[in-house]
Image (cartoon, rainbow over all chains, first blue to last red):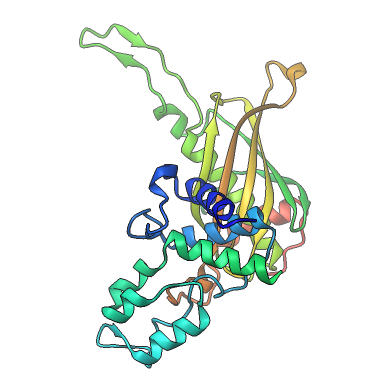
Length: 128
Length: 178
């Protein structure tokens, strides 16, 4: 499956899960900030990606868990270097450059972009 | 007593499907407000009363049906909360003396929650030969409250599957040991 084909499937999943128009689903769009995803939508996206691509996604594999609650990873409203390192190790499909430049906790959600989902699916399919 | 919007579970295939029925009665107060007759300032009837089951309560009926299916899959240990109405379409009114049938099908389940598809059918007892007619679809998502991504903590007691649910299960012949 080509990257364009993966993008089209991801786009279809997001249109269905978030009720957005397909032209809003651009590679740089953030799921929460641009497409309005709320917490339960992330589980919906996981379920729909599993159905669309036929692979299984483990808990914490696509989106992080318990990182922002760990006092070692978040201090004074900012993600620590250790926290960013942990995120990068657990979630290699996500580009954390913008968070490294400005590690405020409020900016964590912005790194979850459409492109990150495409990266994730591409890696999962390649590993299958 | 919690507001229950299903009367009986009539079929349960664990982790797969649950079917429940709801008899609509004119004794239910909400039917008198939904919708009452309308008269103009001179007292002339503008519109006769039209008692119909509110669509929001039909969705709640499906949520209770599907919620039991999802809860049963994990022995009612999880606090199963309706988190998202993925899709809801209702094409026909349901009025007093009619029976609704909800069929919930489990689509996916994980430690964090579940998604279900739902079929809503109607039996009009004035036209029994017509049988069950599909009147809508209600697809839902449920969250297991204690597994929420925010890490929030809730009371240990399972306040979702309360005495009303246990009574419903018992009177439907479903073993209930929680």
